[in-house]
Length: 531
Image (cartoon, rainbow, N blue to C red; front, side, top):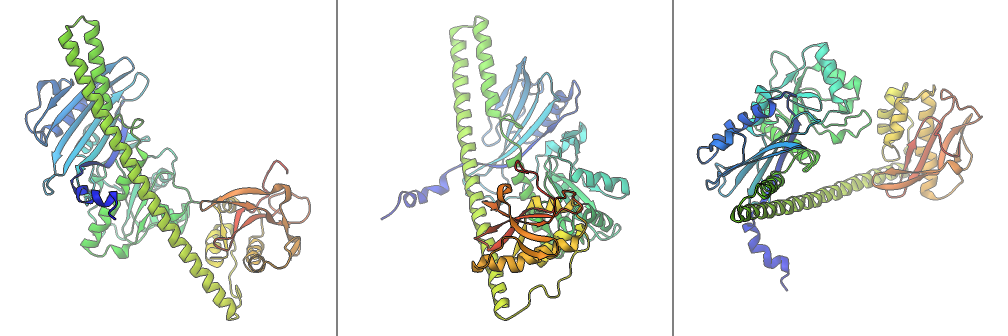
């Protein structure tokens, strides 16, 4: 029996919907004439794409509408005590795909107590279920950046790459990477030779296309080493590679949240073009998630409704005729209908993106479980073959080496949470090798007993002065890969000292799904209500 979905299948290709391509938001210079200057630049850009000559009201900053079959232009002005705003909506048919129409929105506004702001939204109206496009910021963003100067999070928005050529620029770049106020991604392209970059990506075109969306930076090997020193090797980029550093970068983060394309994947022009496309898509997708409608962007349809209401109120207070007030009411009703339609489009877009994100999360979780199962199978085969685990392992000599060592030496057996990794970075406990030996005990003796379900772990002596004990009243819950686990055990030094140089605590729990010991916190004593 055919389902309702099957019955609708022949019609799905006819449905036209709005696809959110990218969002941009930032600040204009804090000048009296900034909004007027920005509006003139935007209208110059729009005039080249409109289906006719823009009316005189356009340059005066007033509302207008120019209907021209696929090249419609319209603007709204809102001038109220609490806000002054102007917004343009410009349509532009795609030059190669029939039925696809690009719609750009530009919004300028200022409130009495804030710096003048700007925002942009690029939409594609199409019946295509999935878009095969290469995102690029509208041209007027480059005009505004070049003519007026734009900022985001306090940093200039540029339409050209930033070449890191000296120590001062390098320090400024590294500080910018981890600045919590940074709002835009940074796309870093590494080159091996200043005079012969040998890149297959056009960094000038990439920077222009991402103007307002990301900052493109070109670095030399010395800056790659500085990246490694500031963060770690897994968060660096080198040897003609490309990496996106999203806002919120922290040395403790999972490096996979900042995607990396190795230089080996960029040896031909076709490979360079594909990485260029992927970078643009990732940055554009980030923009639609992070630049929020209603907060960072004032929707054009909402401003149009506010403008119509203001006109209706003006007519009512000025003693206008009934026919004029009726026409204004009809205009406002039409504006509200369009606002509602757009709100439904945005809601549907959000639902679709949530569904896609859930599918990606499920697939990632499935892949992770498969990898974990393969690791566990390999560990079991090694055990069955009589292999002696960790017989030739080299122990870390310093806390700076500890995270990388644990990721390699303890894979599949012991994992550290972000809190535990952060604790290691600022650790004061002196004997790093002793801590490593304790983790090897967890990976072997402790894990095997938890797997087999035999033998007590209570007050087990690991080595002289170190034992394994229940946490008791210090037990706590922690998050690990979408799970809530209990840290009910800890490895601890004896005695009553709490001096961090001599007091060791490794709090851990057991993950039944991956058959790993998960370290929730270490190596210092954790302050709790009980302690």
